[in-house]
Image (cartoon, rainbow, N blue to C red):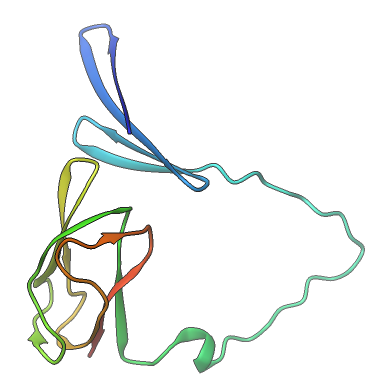
Length: 134
């Protein structure tokens, strides 16, 4: 991770940057930004675009909420175990990323169906950490 300080007029900006795949993560004065730097590829074709209908298999199990890592980081604390009943907005996991702590909460009340991490684990961007059935 690179850190740089910028000054514009009377304002000072401390910027931390980390590249993960095609994403550039920026932490600027307490806010985190993600810039997707995938090149846009346009294909010219005379074919019509095909559309597909989503099926239950594509969507996943109905009544199941997945909590994923919002960025690469380290798991500091896991407050639940499989089978626990949780309330909406209850803090399930605390992780550290870019020298900041992030609390991951339950979207709704339910039961922990799957837990895929433990304290000390390094996790990747969008890695599923918890599944909650509601």
